[in-house]
Length: 292
Length: 173
Image (tube, each protein chain N blue to C red):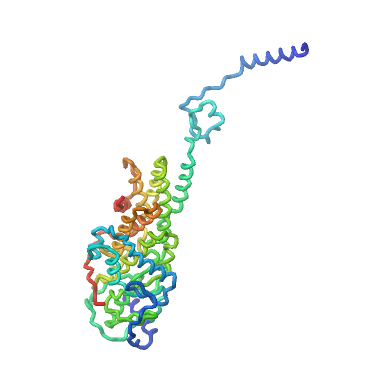
């Protein structure tokens, strides 16, 4: 039923996209920060917030990262260069909250996917292109990639103002930014907002990892707690929410002169992310599928 | 002057009669002294038992302020029911209501740190928060963790469920 719904969604999207897109040379992004290229339709407030968040990594607030984060990042340090590089390998394009149907296309070209018969058991809400409520950010690249894989055809993502890019791997890195990215942190101080945003970037970038049945480190429904029944938990102990906790913990450790309000807010974000680990969570191979 | 004599004699006789026959006030035992002004009017008690508090020890402005801060903070903590009403998109990342709760709890922590005399009230606040089953589990865990941190001996901790305790144990300090 889930695959049927997704196929229908994609079919509708394909019908709406019309004729084959001509290959477009990669233009200079009108808006970019680091390796992230931002769709021209992303509202200015979100764009500015994103650029500020990415640049805030240079503040070196993750210098006190614990070994567990370094192990999961597969890095020897959490310096600004390393963290930016880690994100850059997994995130490349930023789509707006209202993604047009034409963002996803396929030209019918057969494509030899890795692990051709292995698919994750995912939740419709996790992978559908439209969501109710305020979106902060999510990884659409893995959803688009899986759509192409199910059809056995090479899919592409169209970025307004930039062109069309083949989705040869979730590592192509297509993130969707929403109104929540700027609104959720509206009343927070700069440090806490940066921590929240950087954790979000790392979280979403993590969804570009994994392969086969575990591609994308997709979320699972929570069994108990605040989000019982919602696709807001992880069965993987090295998944996106675990990355959250470790990033926030790093910010907490660097938070020597923080106010009580900053510390309590960060501690609560940390606990909220920790609470999303399902009992018996286990670690999986994070090797990505396909090549960017 | 002669005219005043009968009046003075009459007043003297009345005074003598009052002194002899007026019933004395019954003594009030300190042990029986009412603790709450609601049960007996303080005006009847205070003059006879000056050391016995009529309505508990007088609270300092700081205590009164904290009591109000605690009351408003507790009543505004995000509940599980509120979190359940959010969309899947909104619960994907830490919801804004939890971020606001963190800021409110920061004010409580700051007040306690600034005035050690508020420790008993602080412990009660964190205990009330941790025990409230309607409140978000993450918030309860934070309150429980703060109770443990604030409590010197750790005796008589709030009886929170095991999952709340386990989550709180993940806090570093």
